[in-house]
Image (tube, rainbow, N blue to C red; front, side):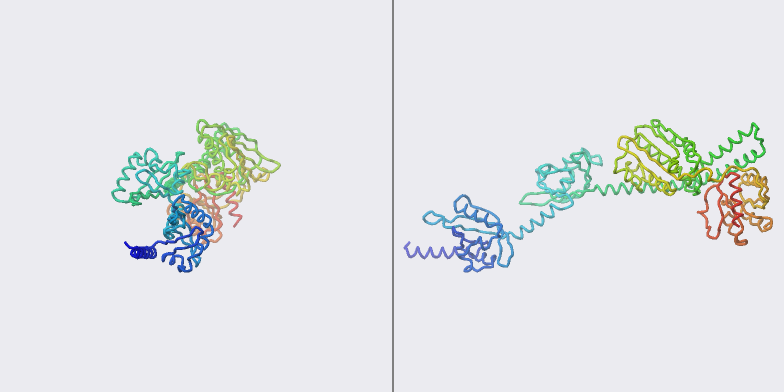
Length: 628
């Protein structure tokens, strides 16, 4: 080939090479050793928004590279010029409009004919969109609430922090390369072997390409973690991988357990309501029997001389009837039908009365001891509510001693503060400060789920404060607990006597006595007649209303039971007050039934609970007449 032909061929090759470079989709640029641009293709013009003639001869790094990358890029260029390596690196370029673009470069040294480096050629790909997509994926992956994992045949390839948190791990190295099933108990909740079930589920996923199922994982500390697992197969770089999502189901399981517990309590409440209604009915009938017994014994006591050998026996009968009345009060409190009345109560005597019941509530490894001083005063409160306070405090003390111990009860008077004091001490586990601050909160309990409602001490607090008292707790972990209740003290001389009087000297009055229980009606009539009252008897409200119409001028008051056949006591009272507004009426009943009746049209009608002492009977009648 002649020189001319060779020159033509070289010119053609150069033109062809220039056309290839200029039309390439990648950014191609050439830099001299001093960093100035000597080559700039069409793709570079489009990306950097700079024509070739404006770019040639300018410093590429200073003009187009982000300031924080310039030092590193210059160092990389010098390494290439020195022949150390061909570099692939990323950098951020800044366009004239301020936009940033991320490029990945392949940089190669260009040598001159004399073997000296004459510059570098860099071929770049704009990967901005890919980087942004990767960053978005990374943000989602790293900050997702669900655990996310990528695994292949070798085990876990990558995972996010949530997956580590679910498993109780600190670093990816503890999970990468392992099968997730390795962090599981030996068996699943359905009894299947975890390894075998994991492989079976893997086969199902492989067949269908995706699968969702429940799984139980186990942390290194032994904590079980229920999760919902979603698995989907995908291809990544020509290999099959599994994309796994774990959703922690701990809260869902807790809610399901709580819902089941609430349903169980609702079912129990419905059963208790039915039992309570039965207990109320039994207590009502029993109180009628006690009323008849107590009245009959009281009538006998009137006729028995003080020195008669029979008198102590009759007094024991009266005391036994009082104790039986105490049992019915507990039944009525259980059925929520106990009359809510405030009275003066001997707290020491009340605790002594409850001791047999309290002892039967103790296991054999718990001893109960009472220390009580004679008290010449009373506390003013609702008796049934005070019984509940005592019972709750003692049962709480019992539950604080799962391995047995001693419970000490004490009642005394603080004369300086004018308070009656009651304390319950145990030798149990005690409480820390955080627990002591919350023990009176409703529904707060340290007992296992299903073992307590968390209402016992809140009821204690409510009853005591309503009575004007205070509750204090002294406790230390491992040293037991003492609960102290202080109630206002009322001196004995301030209280009116409640003893049965000798036969009354009241002016004779006519009374209409209405009760369907013949024994109660007969003994009550005899008590009234013995004390100078004139009595007309009726067995139900309709009969009583007829007697009222015929003998109204002879009657001063009506004493009627509430629950009766044909016409009940409330309706009887309403009709009487319609005909004779303000006419005195007194209810007497085995329990507080007035809430179950429409009493809107019945006013100023007191309720005398059965069984009653004769003094209580006459006091209520006198008060009703005085109110008229």
